[in-house]
Length: 222
Length: 222
Image 1 (cartoon, rainbow over the protein chains, first blue to last red):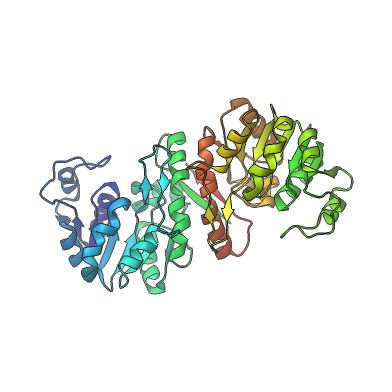
Image 2: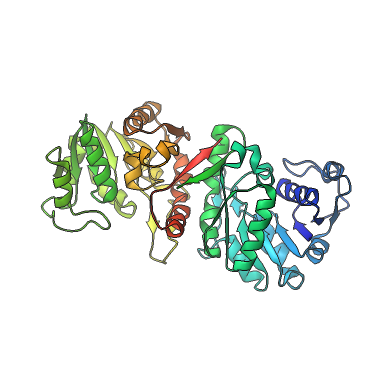
């Protein structure tokens, strides 16, 4: 399948790399595709990333990635996701979009606050901004390496969530998660469930600080 | 040990009952100890509760429970906890207080919003209100029956948290949790970690809706 991944930090790199490895035709969208030398936060530079995927995926602008994808992965910084995606609405219409963003505001220090949009989640705000796109919140609750390789931890015995208003879109995302190795995929209902998923992040960040490494996840024991 | 439990809903009843069963001398504080017939939300009336504890615990006012306890359990409704506890500050000075409250505002429907206090948690606001009390946040992340009987679910293989500014107080609470049957007790650091613990509740409530029962919990797989 043609996939457009928007955002080239550690999450975008991990998703685009895994999707290419699984045989999908991937464009990784980034603000400036010519700038492959700059470190992307904690992630490698795009030059280093291109070397790891060995020609199986390519870089493009956000607009090129959005146009290319039948399926869209939103791995943008949560604080700029709305303004970045709004001009791409026509290109994204009718498509399933996996929304991995978290609207974390670190401006007042740690732990960050989670921004809300008149009480709603960023995922709902994106759905309002892109009414013809089929938004599914998923994967925002854990570290990038585990998103695409859940079996690295406890042989995959931990939980990932999906939430969204379109049942067929959730089924498509669930199938993709299974192809990554996920077994415990919990459907939380409509997109308003993204509020709880985004508000999980302060506890995740606290655990990251206490455990000293990001390779952990929650399991819903039931 | 003498324990004062403040708040007589399902959480206060579960904690007071378990503590009495373990041999502690318990006063369950309630707004009107003479009113034993009224249903307490989803929990039994206090008359029914008294029958289950068979004389091993007794009712009192909030002030009586606060004065009685060497250890305090705060199981009040989060929305009234500050105003209820403030007049009891002298009585609570020097004591360890387990804070189980959640500041959930259902006034705009489901899912509720979690109130914050200039960005901080209710636990921190209570610590500011009661500067001489040794506040430890714990047990606010799961249903009452599992708080005191964790082995009812997956033989206890799930996680509970402690957070607080006083290491000795956290050690005392940890020992109490072990006496309830808890094995996986994760120390999240100082009381600011209560922000993440309180913000977990919208996801907990969504899971409650989807699973259709409250007997679940999270495990931090690591």
